[in-house]
Length: 136
Image 1 (cartoon, rainbow, N blue to C red):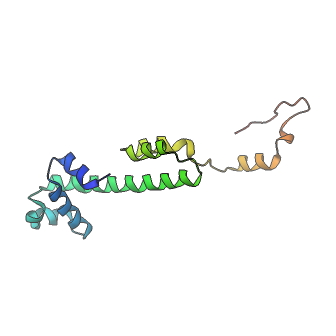
Image 2 (spheres, rainbow, N blue to C red):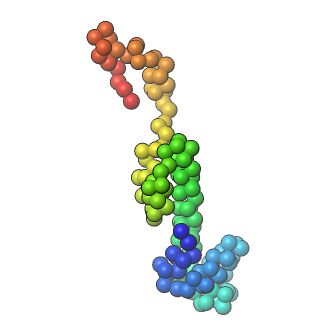
Image 3 (cartoon, rainbow, N blue to C red):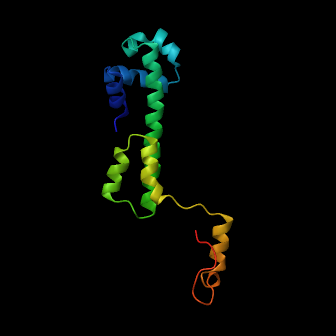
């Protein structure tokens, strides 16, 4: 996903304006400083537009990072298919990514699961082959 293009479409401004603002933000300039002293560089984006731009920039960068981590985690399990990769790439929210990743997320290890593992299946069944305990 091209973050700059997406933000430009959302704010209905030119991609050159967004690119200049992103560059200034990455250099450490604050939103009020950019709005007040760098109007010529950003094509006169106002304070409100710059705040929305800064928020969306952070959100979209975090989303891209999360997509990479999820793709890598599923790939290490050997379960990444081309269709699943497309779904991950198409996700536009963190919630959508979580929904995609949920079936592939490793289960938490609790004391109960450790005890059940060490207890063994044969100890959990009575003589009739019925389970006597709970199963996770």
